[in-house]
Length: 69
Image (tube, rainbow, N blue to C red):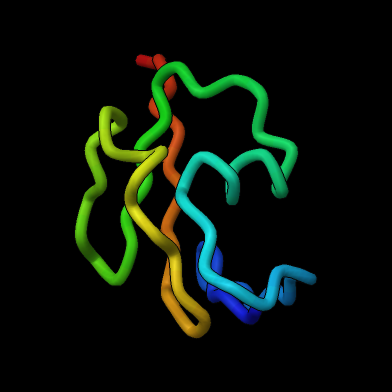
């Protein structure tokens, strides 16, 4: 499977579709608080991460909220 993650092309060994939670696991994203995920410019609510499927060729944006000032 090939995905575009934050503008970078990445290949994964999964040949079938996976859900957003599984993708974050594959990327070793442990801290998920303050995280937003968009697939093909559509924000996926955190409550749907375990059911929303990511497909070959999808554009994935992963954004972490940070504090600053």
